[in-house]
Image (cartoon, rainbow, N blue to C red; front, top):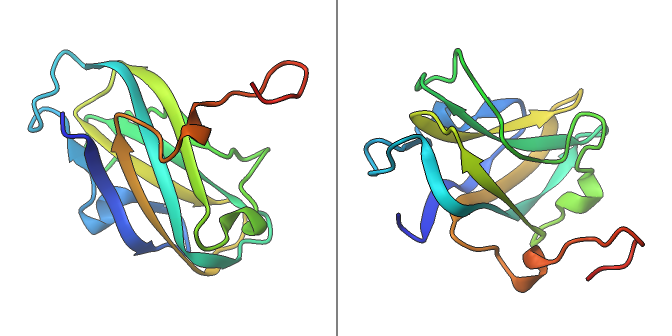
Length: 152
């Protein structure tokens, strides 16, 4: 596996969008990943290029995998940044903001991509860089919040 699998490079995102609509998805069989698994962690890294505007209710960005190249059926999401009930807010999506999330991904299907999903209204501006890699954007991505609320 390469150390970086790019999905979006300065991609303007204003409404719901699966990454395949701009031809940005990974064919895991073509890239030599077989048996529907990747050993160890797979990191989703995101960097905001153009600050987001609009999105009053926020958004989330989900990793999606399917045997359909259009993600029309059998879509599974092993991890997301934000959620419908705990979205990323516009203030968090300022230019230069970075996010990394890791998961042990087992049971991946043939295709791997991303879904940008506004909670209610579309954004009026905003662009992201997003890629999968073998590590986080920065060491901050390796930290986890302790049960006490302090960062370890």
